[in-house]
Length: 288
Image 1 (cartoon, rainbow, N blue to C red):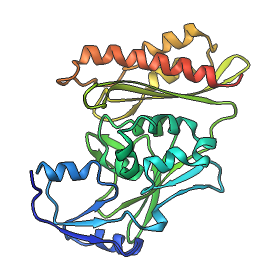
Image 2 (tube, helix red, strand yellow):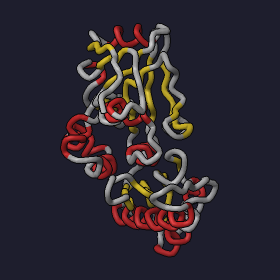
Image 3 (spheres, rainbow, N blue to C red):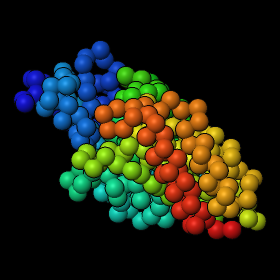
């Protein structure tokens, strides 16, 4: 199909974008376009003005933060994240997830900020950011704010970002000492989207789990922390029995969704499996 008519403009800089978002004009931002352009082509979405933000230097690249950890600019592509040495050193879990996103073409064009803003319930990046305790930084023409990824996603394709705000970077704090992270997913073969996926970060001290972050994607209306699993892990012995028992609570408190690819019962079963596998792999990578 052919998209409905729209105006296209390339942003002159960050101030230009923020000024455009501050108006009542129908402006839609274009970063990598890997989610938006197919929707336009199928006429599942229409836009007034498409504002291209893909070449704004302030929104691009990876840097080390003074507070520790790293910050990733919103328009940094998946492939750039995959190849960046700072990401490899500070957030290897992120590289593991990004390596499985789309194909080469998608990874060369798709951006982390675009995926976060789109908030697809099956987006693999969301549980990874939740497990890494990431923070989402936003700016408008009149304000700046940053908040945890946990709470940023409200439902399918819905976040707490206001219409006048732009995601400028994703901040990932330093991991606890000796922590290990892992990612596991079971995907729908034709599309590659996850039926259920899990990200886990564990730290172990004196044989006991001192830190646990576990998040699920694909199972509910949005990516979500599996807090019942975390509660069953912290200050427990880092044994296979502990991990298996905790994984059984993978979907506790989560409204698991059914669709044409998997009903709720099957997706619940898959979620428990991927959580257990992610916990086992994270434990194997954790020191202590």
